[in-house]
Length: 512
Image (cartoon, rainbow, N blue to C red; front, side, top):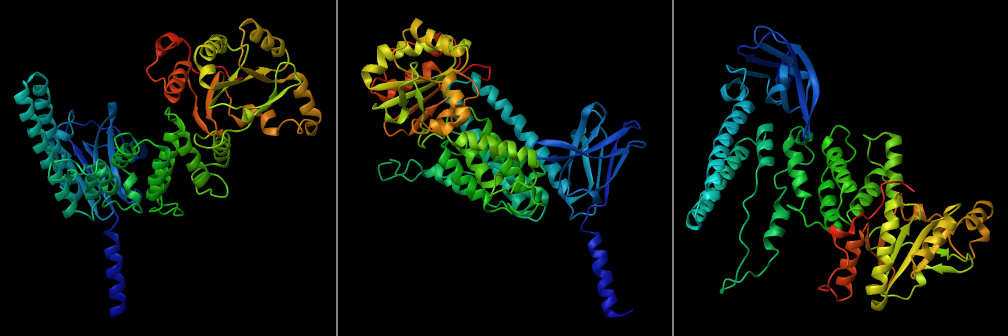
């Protein structure tokens, strides 16, 4: 046999050992039944394979699966987890307790799983100890509480030391990466001067953010095949991690994503991270966080920056349509101009020509139940607080068709003295037949104000400053009062409306 052929055969044999082939589990007392194999993608389990157990023995072909954390699921949704690392040829595990798999789990073959289960037993022990002293803390006197705090600190140090040891000794194994992802860093104390005064109040936070992802390879697709990456990512983008300011979140999201393989469709880290951040801030209830969603859409989903290869064209179009709508009303950006007529249909009023320190833009519908309650309250605030503080209200009412007379009647009946404009039926008809005729008075964006301002429900309240920069949006009436009081130097003034007595949300549930 030639030397060259021998080298080829050696290479072939070696290659067989880098992909897990045999997955064998023995569960004492398990009846013959259907068993499922599930794999993690982030925090969720997904079906991966099926087999039949025979005399308590379960086998799967691991060569079909990528490296990651898996679960063997038995009847009754009872399951145990194991690591499949393609650098190992075989996984063999046994348990003699079919009611509590983990308690008596023994790993026969697989270095990853020996380390993994030793770590599980280690963490279980400290979790139980932590639970005991936490319960004791609730009943302890002040002296004992200080002692317990020190005990818990030492316990945290022991856990971090063990996590660091596993990582340092197993950086090339999936178990090492997973344990490292789940660990919390030890934070340094902020530097102090000779008098013990902290010199930099942001030192610990800046250190935390700078080192949060130390040791993490964002190009490794196995990161997302366990819940720990999801948990670490979710914490980072919560108030336990980053300061919840849109520009700060965007900055650090971009730093993370730039370390990933954008165009490698086999690397799910980019996909998972971009989807997680986008979804989180699309759903956020915190005012102004839609700026993050818009940024993610414009930079990763929407032409010319469509890198979201996992999205269907239909879903991409829907997301980008939402991005376009929200993009016009981002807090900190210029507010869209509105030019509409008052109830005479002769006087055109431009929201950007209003000479006021602050302008409240109020979108409402005379047939909307919540509007009928909120609008008079807005008039009360205008009379008793806003008008004398150089705060104007520019109210845009639904005034087409039969709503025109209802709109005018509501204004009269409730003596609404702030600015009232609307898109009336006659203006609407002209816009449909010959919009150019109106452009000497108004703009297309004004005539399409529901799209321009993303008015999918009413009432909706926005605030812009004297430079016509949008400062607040999506406010309830009590929030509006509180904000205007703060902005105009009346923070401690008694409140006319509170969350308890307002009685209505900031917008109706019905789309208008």
